[in-house]
Length: 174
Ligand code: FES
Image 1 (cartoon, rainbow, N blue to C red):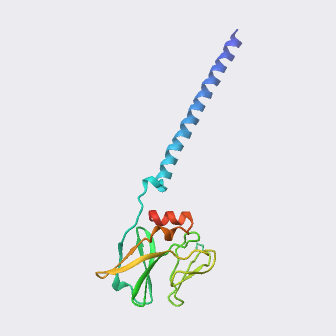
Image 2 (image 1 turned 90 degrees about the vertical axis):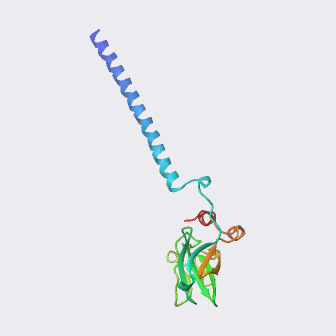
Image 3 (image 1 turned 45 degrees about the vertical axis):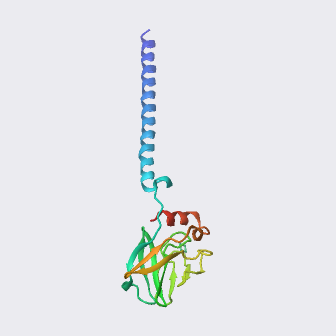
């Protein structure tokens, strides 16, 4: 009789332990989901919570853009190059359309090499070699007004040929 009571106690204890462990595991998974989901939403907010960018933005004083040189600036967090040639300014996204590294400006060769996988682009933004082919640097609209250089994201058709991650980065900013 005593032996039976003991084993009954043991069964109850084991069952209680099983439920406590189960509840703890469920609570842990739920907490991890909430925290993990929050972190993901913070760093990678869904499209509907992000605002599309666009329109003209002042990015650099014109006096800081000398002839024949490309200078860096930023458009809604997107690194851009402003290049003055023949007195006119033009602008390109500095984001390599291969995998997103930031291209450099080589003032000797007048080209934009990508430091990651050896692609390079002419001063017109045209890809010459490397895995970035067939994508050129994305040209931005550029103009000068009241001593400032202004740039704007190009029309959506110009973005169409690019990979989706690149289009997303350009449309929602850096
Ligand atoms: Fe530029 Fe790969 S990221 S060549």
